[in-house]
Image (cartoon, rainbow, N blue to C red; front, side, top):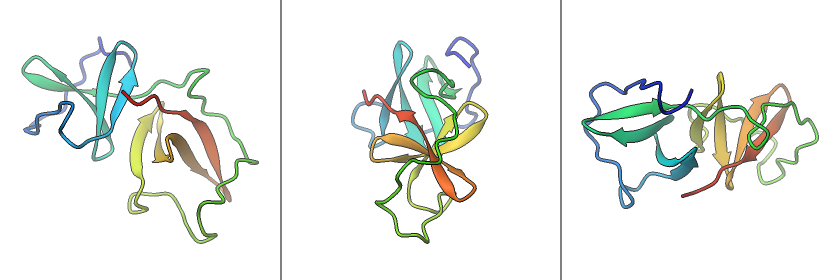
Length: 117
C-alpha cells in the first residue's frame, strides 16, 4: 500500500510528531509512527494507516538460519512479547534491535532493517 491509498485510522486523537514518543520509521518519502501495532502518518485532519511493503530491502523470505540468540529458548514473538509489532506486507513482524523478526515455525525470519527517521 502506498501513502496515496488513504486508508485512515478512525477516531485517532493522539498527535504524532518528532517528540510524541513513538518509533519513527522512514517510509517512502515520509515518516510514519509505530503506534500499537500500526504505522500512522499524520495527514491533514486525519491519520493514514500504512503497511511496509515487501521489497528487496524488507523481504518476506524464510530465513531459518537467522540467529535469535539474544532471546532465551522460551521467547515467542506475539502480541504480548514486549516487542513493537510492525505491519509488513500481509503479516505482522516484530521490531527487535532495529530489524524485523517474523515468527515462523521453530525459528524467526529476518525481514530486513528498519530505517529510523
